[in-house]
Length: 313
Image (cartoon, rainbow, N blue to C red; front, side):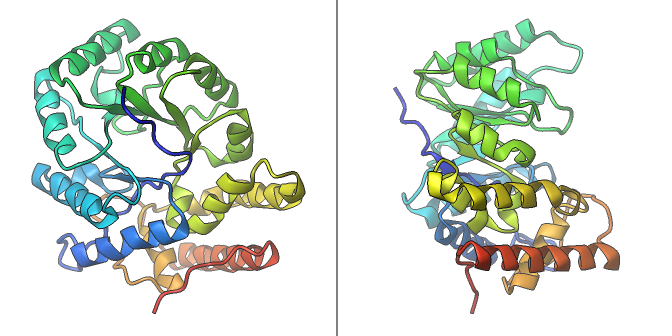
C-alpha cells in the first residue's frame, strides 16, 4: 500500500515565465523554496495554476522533474498526468510523469469522461487506467477546465479502497459533499484536500487532510497557519478572523488569476514576471489597486495574530 500524503497545505504551484515566454527555471527554484519555507506539506506541480494546458508535454515533464529535484524529498510532490484522449495514451503519459519521482499522478476528472457520459463510464475508465499502470499512485482533481466533473462520495470510496488513489482535490463548493467524501474514504490511505476557502475551517474540522487552494499563491503563511491551528481552542478568535479574510477577499483572488497572484508576489518583493500564457482577464490598474489593498489587509492581520510573513532579499 502506498503512503498517504501529509496533512496540511499543498499549494497549487504557479509557473514563473521569462518575459519572452520561456519557463523561468531559476524562478521556479525560488518559488518552490518559498512554498517550503512557508511550511507547505507537499507540492502540486503541473496544475491549472501552473498553466498546464499552455505547457507542452516536454515542459510538463520538465517543470515537474525540476520541482521534485528542488524539493529533494523534503515533501512529496504530485503532478497532473492525464490530458485527454484514449485511456491507453493517458496511461503512457501517467507512467512517464510518475517516473519523475512524484508520489501521485493527478487525474483531471473531466478528461476521463465527457460531460454527457455517465459516472459508470468514468469509473470503468478509471479502473482501466489503474490496470494499465501497475504500481502508480493517483489523485483526483475536479478541475473546472474543460468542465467540472464532480466525483460522488460512493465512487471516491471505491477508488480509495483500491489503495492506489490517495489524494482528492475537492472543488464541489459544498461542505456536505466534502463531509460525505471524507466519510466514504474513512480508514483508507487517502486524503481530501479542499480548494474552496469559504468553508476552509469547516472542512478542516470535518476531517479534510488539508487545503489545496489558490490563496496559497498569495499568502501561504496564513494558509499553513490555519491548517496548523484550526482546532486549537486558544486560537479560535484568530481562526475566525483568517476565515473571514478568506471569504471577504474571494473576488480579488479570482479575477485575472494567475496574473494577479504573480502581481501580488511582486508587490511582496518576490522576483517573478507577470508573464502569463493562459488567457485570462486583463489586470487593470483598478485590479492592481485591489491587490495592493489585499496585501495591506493580509499584512495587518498577520501582524495582529502573530503570523510571520517571509521576506525576500
